[in-house]
Length: 171
Image 1: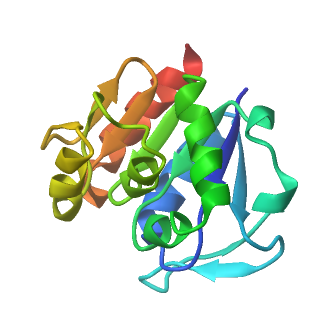
Image 2 (image 1 turned 90 degrees about the horizontal axis):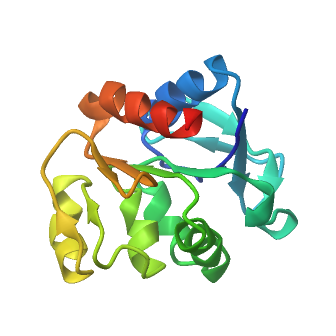
């Protein structure tokens, strides 16, 4: 089973973390939450979910993980301000490891300059940002690019997001 790194901080979109996380763990995958401080509790923007962070970004290496999961909400925008998270995400894209980004999740990949020439989707408010990053933006519930990158737009797309992410983890 796969070891999945989940980069997350406060103001994540609750269901964009909980539902994929549940789908991954139910299939036997191990999800490790990563933020600035291990043991810290972060809360979703809806206030429905609190997550205790497993590891600090300073204590993990991307080589130790098989895949990257980036929930949406305001979390990815906060994380992309830190070069450690940008480099961490870039590693997965450069190494062609599976990356799962929903809603605003692609913002971290934009900052990592890892989406140019790729086909992807995201929340409608970042569509122009993705186009400026030279992404072939699709307004679709789920987009799978090069059997590596799975992106979705919003909470309603989670079933398709989970289905395609789990397919990639099985291959």
